Image (cartoon, rainbow, N blue to C red; front, side, top):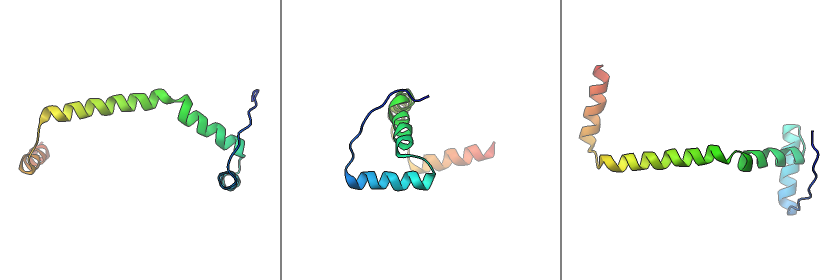
Length: 82
């Protein structure tokens, strides 16, 4: 149940876009804004986890050093044998 109210000012062009998008999706501008807020601000943990995993992958890649194209092909062919 919605219990809190706020007012948001948009530039005319942005508001027209939101109205058109809401009409296309059969919803309201308020619903679009609420969903956007939840997606961007209420689930930051997921984004933080993704960033942490990404950084860990980058660290792992640095530990491998440079792999030649020939080595990559050999690994692919080796994997195909089994």
